Image (cartoon, rainbow, N blue to C red; front, side, top):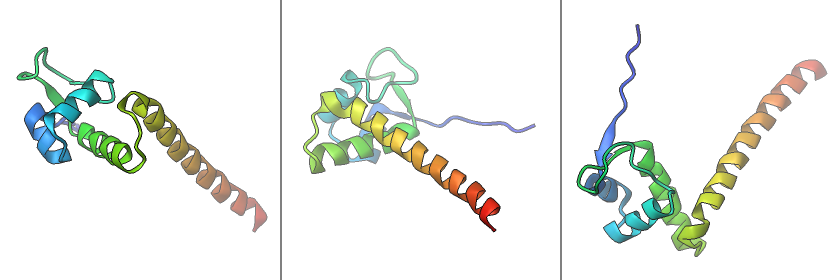
Length: 101
């Protein structure tokens, strides 16, 4: 039997790991780009470790592309969709190559 464990980080640790100041992280949370997996108050918040990569990506795009925090959920969603379409395209190309040989 396989046991899967979910790793969590607190608010301060999330800020440190993502190299984002607390105010910016609060904006990410306010815009629901990142949501606490557990806890009602900032001192109790726990985030999954995937929140670190999401925060990094959002901060990088906010800085490099001068994207507003309010637009970030749409931008991240479109990037995820693009990644899925690329994976699907690759799978379809592999299937097509089997028929062309």
